[in-house]
Amino acid sequence: MNYRLKNTNGKVTFLLRTGKDLVKNQMAIASAQHIIDHGKLLKSDVSGYPINIDNKWYFEGEVSKRTAPRKAEGEE
Image (tube, rainbow, N blue to C red):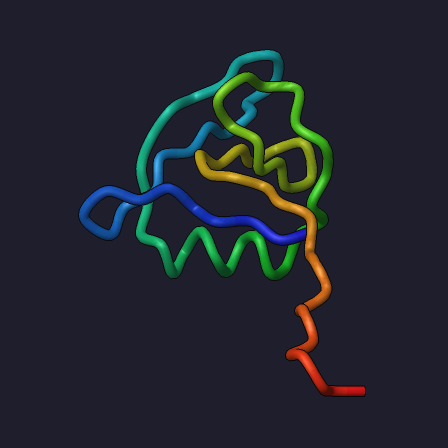
């Protein structure tokens, strides 16, 4: 799956699960990308935060399915 983080001025809004609660905060895009790269992307159960990493980190953004690139006319 592909994803696109929603950022404002280089910051990403996220939720962090702490027990049964979720804490909202912001972090730098690079830090969010590091967490995503080293975690497992799962289906999110939190509205507005479709990027779920390890059922612990939830990021604002969009998740999209990877599509195959279109071949130009005349290519085999």
